[in-house]
Length: 467
Image (cartoon, rainbow, N blue to C red; front, side, top):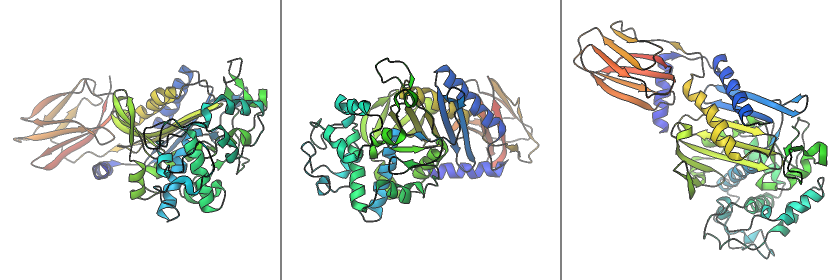
C-alpha cells in the first residue's frame, strides 16, 4: 500500500505544479465545515487540526472558553485517554533501547497490591487484556475527586480504588484506566525519573511537540480553556473552574499515565503523523503496536485494539478507508484523533465540554473534515496536461457524464480515474474515437483521469465532478 501511494504521489507531482502549502480555498472550506458541524451539535468550544502529508497543517477553532473569550489555537486541551497512545509509544521506544521487554511480568515493579496479579505482562496492560478493575469504575474514586477539587493525586494513592478483577489475565478484553496508571508507574521505576521526563525525551521532542505537557509533573504558562461539565448534581453544563474551583493540576493528576497530557490540536496531529509514519518508533515496534485484539464492529466493520491504539477497518464514513484512532474523555473535555491509513491525512479535534458523546466527534465532526480532504485538492494545483492535442475530455467540471474524444486512430485506449488518495474508481477500455463515461455514482470532488495506449500514457488531467 505504501509503495502504491508513493508511486501515485510521484505521478501527481509529475502532472501538477504543487505549491508546498495549503490553498486558501481548502482551508476556508475546512473552517466552514468545522463551524457548521460544531454549531449543529452544540459544541461549546473546539480546537482542530488537519495534517496533509508533504503539504501542510491547517489549524481551526470554534466557539468559546467562556463568555467573551474565544477558543484560540494555542490553548492546551486535556487529551485524556489519548495519553495512552503516547505512553504505549514510550514503552515501545524503551523496549527498542533495551530498558524493558513488554512480555515481562509486572510483579517486578508492582507489589503488595491485593487485586493486582503480578503475572500480568506489560503487553496485557497496553492492550487491555489484563482483566484489572478500572479505578474510574467506582463512585468511591469520583466522590473523592468531587469532594476536594484542588487535591493533587499521587498515582500510588489511586491504587486504593482498584478492586476485584474482571477476569484472569489474558482471558478477555476490558478497557481499564488502571492498565495505563500501572504502565506509567513501571516506566517511572525503570527510568528512575518522573514519567514526564521520559515522555519529553522519547516522545514529545522526537514528535516536535513544543506545546505539550504532562500534568501535574510539568506546568506551563500557555493558555488553557475553561472546561464545562454536566457531571454534577444539577445535570446542567457548568464552568467547573469558575463554579467549583477546579484547577488543571488537580484534574489531570487523577489519571496519570491513563490521561494526564495537555496539548494543542496542532501538536497532536504531529504526534499521530510521526507515529504512524515511523518517525518515533521503528517499524518492528509499530508492527507490535498494531497487533490487534478484536473488540467488536463499527458500521458492520471490524474494530481492534492494539497497544494504545484502535483500528477501524474500511469505514464508510471515512471513504471506506481503514482508520487508526484514539479519543479521550474526562470531566469537561472530549477529543478524537485519527489517521487515514491510505492518504495519511491526520485529524485532531479537542473540545472543552463533556456533554458530548465521543461518537459525535468520531462519526460526525472528524468525517466532515475528512470528507473535505477527499473532495478538494489541498493545494493550488495548476493543470499541466500532456501535449497531446488529439484528446479532448469534456465537460469539466462534469456532473453525470464525461465525453472522451480521441481524434487519432487507435485500436484501444485504457481509461482510469483516481481519487485524491490514489484509489482507482473507474477502469475501462475505450474503443473507437468517442466514448461516454458515467460519473453519476462518483462523489463530488477532484479526481485524476489517465488515458493510456499500448502501455504508454497518452493523456492525463485533473477533472472536477459536481452534482
